[in-house]
Image (tube, rainbow, N blue to C red; front, side, top):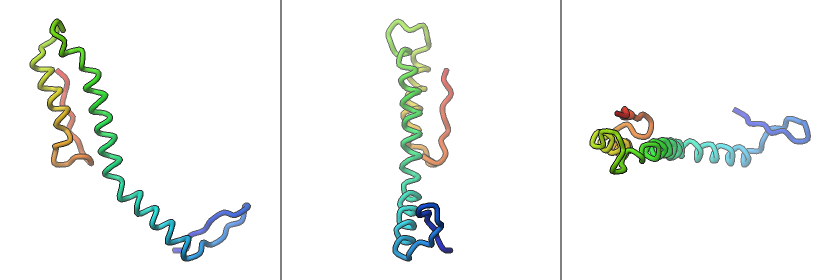
Length: 93
């Protein structure tokens, strides 16, 4: 399938070299999909950990053991077999 570019408002077919460069960039982008997905999961996990930091102070009025278990489960999401494409998130106590 031919690829085209826009030059000064005119649709022009790309040269074979330009097409190869576009296909190479697209392949590199696709190859990085898992890396980007893993980054997003880690960002979400880190956000949830920060949001629950307060549960670990000595005088927090919560079940600290339950929260500690939850926080460990958050840390373990990267060990799930389907990471990063599918993550089962733990439920906060």
